[in-house]
Image (cartoon, rainbow, N blue to C red; front, side, top):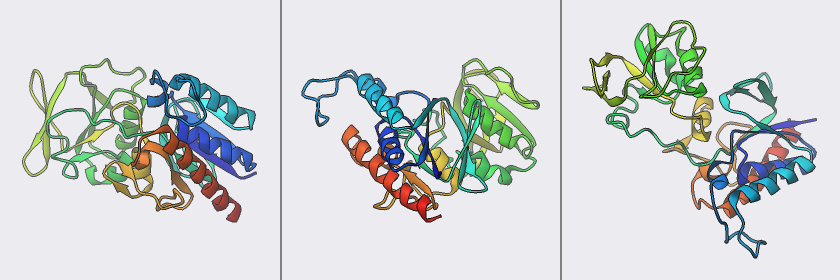
Length: 286
């Protein structure tokens, strides 16, 4: 049976799961939490609900519907996304999943930490993708800004290539079970500094850390992070798609807030449905 991976369990991801499951695909939805919708107190503008309901309740109904139709919902954190022998492979904190096609639906991009110099040095020592850019830092000193599993995964990618790798937790406690060879600095970061390119990281106290590059892996990975790793085109932090919700990467689709436009449940549900139907057509042609 053809299979599809859906990353994100919000309205776009669940709508995609419902349509793909009804088309008799093997559907797996990987999600960490309810995202922005799960934190919404009242929804009054979604069709078919005369009385207001919470985002958590709407999500619960969508999950139940997707599972009733046969979709598998797995609550976990996705930390890696790559090509497989056929289709795509997704790495989570505790497992690995493969699919013939994939839909990115993790919502709006993560906020970049408000640290001076990050945006100014993008492309000149500030990177958001270790898989993409590790090659350029062979034998050099780099840092990873973040403190979760996603940051550790980026560090693991860099360790065999870079001369040294330091995890910057920006005041947070470091995670357990650090990879061998990974240094940690828990001081609050105040700035990324340099001249034409990144040269050092400044802290709220003490001496700066000399680095040739810094990789931003704050919080958890989002759709734009995964799209970037696979070579899909971005417009800022939004994923570029065509009218079928397809990216420039064959078999990879995107839906919901990660594609921009109207950031509303109604649009996310529509995007998810279209992405699923396009993915169904794609896998049936393979």
